[in-house]
Length: 180
Image: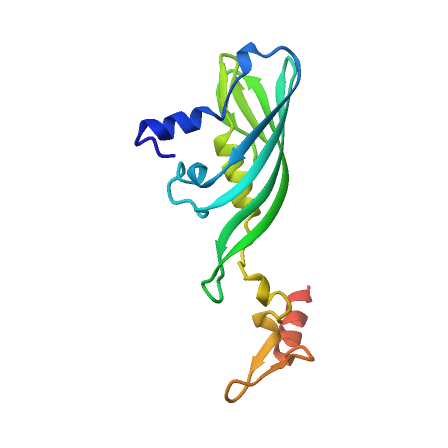
């Protein structure tokens, strides 16, 4: 994350939750995500977007459960045409923060935080969940009905014909793979 200026630090504080002041129970938070949010992260794969992140926090004596629902639009660059397009995204994610002696990440869904932790900042979690929801292959919607590259055989000139059967070399390789 970038902490180059006061504005960046100020924006990041909007994602702080003081867990030491929370009683046991359920709490709801809502965060607006815009271009300035993505600027907080170095080498961000997303530059622009307009999203809403709703968070339901459930605090017990031994752990904190975080349920994120993130909905909105991000700007992506098409891998094929390099055109910028709006990508509608919606993601639901859960994270459990268990209390322990020291901070440690157990898995993508479970982290241990110190009993002494008074404040958590959810900005990095929100960013990670948005980033993971970005498709590996970013195609402009106008290419949605076209066959994928691996379904096209390129012939002479600009002609294209769709594959109707599997290449026989792949069949032979599959036989080798399944041999015990």
